[in-house]
Image 1: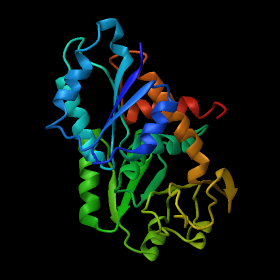
Image 2 (image 1 turned 60 degrees about the vertical axis):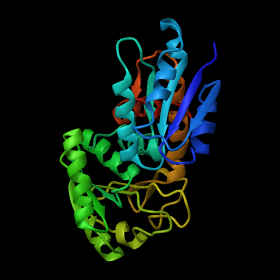
Image 3 (image 1 turned 180 degrees about the vertical axis):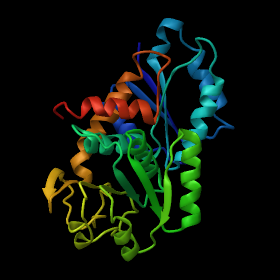
Image 4 (image 1 turned 60 degrees about the horizontal axis):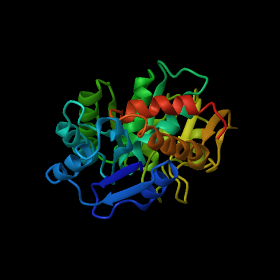
Length: 289
């Protein structure tokens, strides 16, 4: 029986990236749908849960993607609300690659070390990847500050995440290089998740920061988000700080994404969101990629 993955994207055009990785992850056929919302997803879910015998339902799964993480979360909830009893299929949420990218980054940052009690900051952290990194670091025990250009917007993001995950994220406004340089003082972990094409920190701003232990840049499009970090850095020591570049943890992100797709077909009741995906990343990070 063929393994069918229904790729439900909140954007009008479904992601080609997600489609390719889904095939590589073990789906026999990936059926993409774009422009999916909680209002129109019902018939698609019914088609997925009612068409195969109980023992065969594990061969159907749903992937939720798109560029908007909040929309993806709403869609995931709407899909789950259609399930009942044994009439369900496995689900994965990875809007904008947020869960797999964040999980790969934080898994490397925490490999072989504890971040409990560490002071961490996520620069440009109001986007999907930044939000997930902040939550994963917080769950690992770090004290996390999230920054954005506007304090009001950043505070709204932190309030939402704190309510949903029970975290205690702190918001800060860092609209320019100078303020971002000041914001990392006293921090032991720095992660940049700013927009492509924006330099979040110059090398001299972090190279002499007392107490800084770990620094990571999630921007995979030139120019780099943090000066002085190479895209391929993976626990590379620079200025006494362990550095991680986007390609350095990118291999784990792809391996993790494929692995999660494959796991969807192990049963019909799996839900892969931030916590489950991060747990799997921590297992994979020690294995050869």
